[in-house]
Image 1 (cartoon, rainbow, N blue to C red):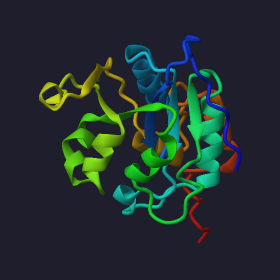
Image 2: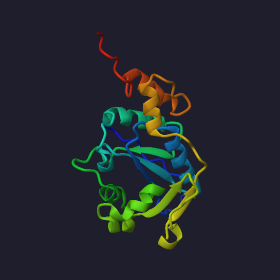
Image 3: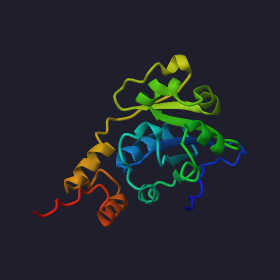
Image 4: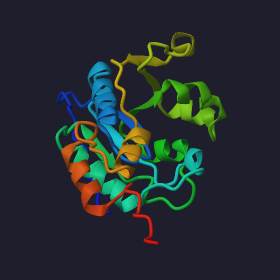
Length: 208
């Protein structure tokens, strides 16, 4: 599984690139994901944002995800319009459970990382695997659509307040399962993949 090259907005000064890390199951990738990542890139003046696909996130083992190869294809094709958003297969290529700290340790080194998370995740970050190391490896940027950024100033975190976008992967899966349109909710390329593969479509009931 090939990984697109990172596109950097370097200034030619030799400074270390400042790179966002935006993880998710992307089941499927939707326009809300893209808007949040793009908004964070601009607000935080990031050189690029790595869109890290989580193949089997431990938080979502209560439901079956779409096949990882289909989610990866949707992510790659859905990010084409914005070269600042770079799909990353880092977690797909690693065996075993996927933890944020492992990803940050792989991606760090020659670049400064900014971990982009939602407000709900920010409230739970202290329960994460090796949470202290997560905070050591990356700056934390909290994006929020409800105007309630959790105590970011006292923790020294960055805040990105987004306009409200009422799109969720759950909504899209539900609409697709019922045969309803998802146009405008996902990139056109993602919609085409969903249609071609039948992903999220409910199988027809057997005939009596």
